[in-house]
Image (cartoon, rainbow, N blue to C red; front, top):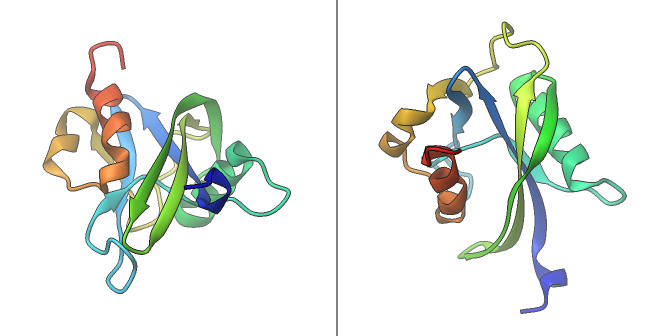
Length: 131
């Protein structure tokens, strides 16, 4: 498949105090019921890291600081092919609570949540001793 056919998606893996920000996908959405990090489609003339910051603010109400790229993953789902740009980020105000359905979950407990398949590499990195 031509990489230009994949929908670019930016994802913020927001970490603070050994926990990450995740939310459950709503009913009626693709992958409903799965848990995810904040993120969404990259707009025209927007970089992936800008999209991750914008999507996190829109979905959680939280401003973030991007630290680095975690991974770029291309994945085929039934609803289409996506190119996911995962960014490790930190909250600008760690005391600000996220907007529902997002919440802080300890990294050590992430294996108790069902994530979309394309998140596997990032979840492994988070759970590694050096992650």
